[in-house]
Image (cartoon, rainbow, N blue to C red; front, top):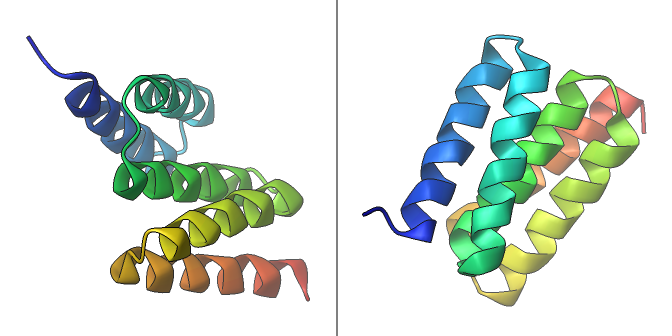
Amino acid sequence: KLSTKSIAIYNGNVGGVLLKMGKYKESYAALRKAQYYLSKNFDPRNQVSNYNDFGDYYKATGRIDYSVYFYSKALSLAKQYKLHERILKSYDKLAEAYQKAGM
């Protein structure tokens, strides 16, 4: 039997692939499923990734305000748990979103 963490990671990965394929509805569903399983077994590293994935989803669908919100949540959590690689990634994604928004 798979752990909730494994199921969350799997769905997060599937959501990311679907997003890159332009299958937004399916991507969103997979990301929500990952979010659900993360809520059952909190893991900061994977939660940061989930927030960044949602930021990517909203950026791809043109909702920059939501993407900034999720990238900011990812950055805050990454800083709280001193996840240095995730901090850098979140800053990069946040900068890209601000640039896309013309800020």
